[in-house]
Amino acid sequence: MASRDATVEPITSSVSDTMLPSETGETKLPVKKIPGDYGLPFIGPIKDRLDYFYNQGRDKFFKSKIQKYQSTVIRTNMPPGPFIASNPKVIALLDGKSFPILFDVSKVEKKNLFTGTYMPSTNLTGGYRILSYLDPSEPTHTKLKQLLFFLLKSSSNRVFPEFEACYTELFKTVENELNEKGQSSFEKPNEQAAFNFLGRAYFGSNPVDTKLGTDGPSLIAKWVLFQLAPVLSLGLPKYIEDLLIHTFPLPSFLVKKDYKRLYDFFYESAGSVLDEAEKMGISREEACHNLLFATCFNTFGGMKIFFPNILKWIGNAGPDLHRSLAKEIRSVIKSNGGELSLGAMEQMPLMKSVVYEAFRIEPPVPAQYAKAKVDLLIESHDAVFEVKKGEMLFGYQPFATKDPIIFERAEEFVPERFMGVEGEKLLKHVFWSNGPETEHPTVENKQCAGKEFVVLISRLFVVELFRRYDTFEIEIGTSTLGAAITIKSLNKTSF
Image (tube, rainbow, N blue to C red; front, top):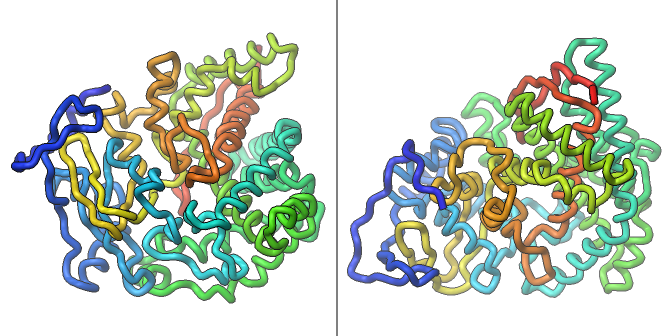
């Protein structure tokens, strides 16, 4: 375990009369009242919302409260607040020790909490509460998660060839634009490649050959915006944006036709999966809405955000890392007869560690929520806190996975961090999938059904990149979700 980073001011606490043993039983921690407050009704939530989005920004918003209250477990309001969310009050968990309580479904409930303190209208999902909003205690949760497991298993033999084909096309597009303009935006080629890959791998259907054409990514972007606008900033003037997207929900009818086009593609393409759904007792319509959401919101959304982030962190690390990755990846493929397989990728420890480190330092979904089912105790590094049944818990994942008590050089991208026996032990503190990296999704938990699939395609992305190029240069900008990457150069393989 690493010591506290010297740049982080130490948190001190006054020891209460009550002391409880820690989870390991080795030390006793004080039981403390959770510090922080919610402010005046209506005014407090709006002030916190303005601070979160504009006056301070997300990270500074939480850091300032940690320093103010000398605690990593605090009470605060979370956006959007009035008038979208009726109750914005949360207990924020801002360290790696308290965060995992969010995964314990014996103690917390996950019903209707996927997007936080508000839930988008079910008009955006065909009138159904989608799997992401269901608690494992609900019978439909088990059936729908089993359906996603079936989808992943039935499509497994198409993943490798379709990924290579779609991302070969992406790299050709980028190279052509580089030759013509001297630079290439990664955003649009990545989104089209990601959506094409998912259609082809999951359902054996190439979206561009259907009525969707190349419209899929733009339709998804608009539909997702209508769900996430209350917790996003679009870069508009502060008060105009706050009124437009943080105060009232965007009306779902404005995206109805776009959603119908996506739905029709999935209904026509996913016939064998919908047949399986009927055998499980799920209607074709409910199954189709869930397949659409899992593919477009969850998986495509993850690729849209995470692949540019991988490029950003590897690009910033410089050519020495690039050459090491290229050497490892190519030598393993060569020693496996020129074939890429799951077994071959397991022989690439640096590549695997780099992907895990990208998940750690910038998890694609930063916020997670749960509601206490019972009175419970939550333990930080410094104290134990009492939480009452019904209170809302919020975890800010980037602070949990950059906890300086758990990770040395926590704010740095360390490519080799998860290599070797000691490095692999740290994987239990990587939480991007709504659960520890060392655990697996089941119908009993809320861990991402496609956890292993997402890790696999993220590794494939790094492998396909360094099969082709020795090094690359990028320019990094910002976007509403994740990084905006402009590729400035690609140096093709020299060995």
